[in-house]
Length: 411
Picture 1 (cartoon, rainbow, N blue to C red):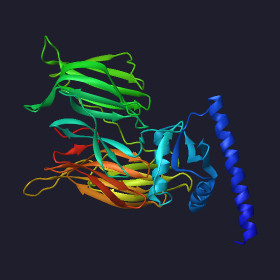
Picture 2: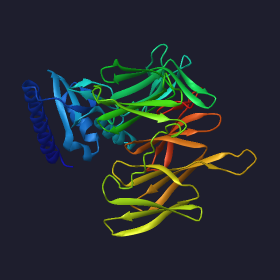
Picture 3: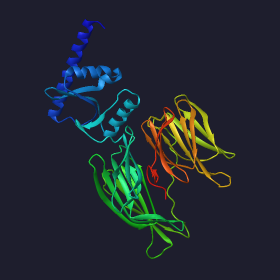
Picture 4: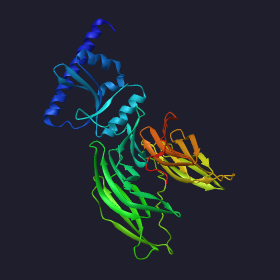
């Protein structure tokens, strides 16, 4: 690059800087600035900003912007996003692809919690199940929510990982094969504000399960024996909006002799991919499950895998290009009669099985950007695996002394 071209390039870049600055200032003055961004650095001089910007990959340049804080103080940001989660997901992808080396997430220019990089899970703190956070960048864990005398029995974050419903009990477990729960309660926790509110009390019961009916509606199914007739189980279904407001409670009664104990509903596998390009189906024949994948774009269908176990659930990647299938537990006819479960990783675009995980138990799949989190249990331990499905490698295992899980701890 000759000297004349360098001067022209520098002039264009400085002009862009001041244009960005004037836009940023007018946005703030009009009150329109209300977005999450990726903060890349702070500089005292324009030349320093230019040098740093020039060192970045050109694919980032179009969404870079500079804000002048003081007379000789500049901050460099990337993009505007609707949530900390979306900003954090983009930043983590840049970081893992070595496009940036460090970053922070900001809201209206101020540092805020990165709800993507900090992933929640359940582990014991002072011998009580509590909510922990794992940081994808530092690989460090810390206690995020704990309440004395309250043991976490279910953890249900929202899609943006900011609003969290935490179900607790003073004690829980199993007695003679029947589950018991004492003093069950529900809290709503807002991570960015670090605000926790008790929103419901359920009391004592014999069954509790939680789930998201849709991204805006969270539900708790709570069952207890009838106080007069012990052969009757009363079940109440409590709906809650994302902001914690309760909805209309639905009640059902089960006669144990006629209906048996109420079983948690099984949600069938979602066969259609989020991008509506693929559909999978299972054909069980002669002791084996055959997994067929149909590609609507190519108007074709083919077998991508087979297993001796039936399918119990699945997840798709956000872009619909990967399929994650969990099979039922199968008893292995050996001396210990061990059970084995499988987790299948399928690349839908390439129509092939990428990897098969086999172990004692796999639960609570969490698709997190280009990462797949899942609980891996054995007879002795419970840990969380973090799998980069695009690179086909386990990048980390979250392990604690007393075990951990994405949604709960094994009873």
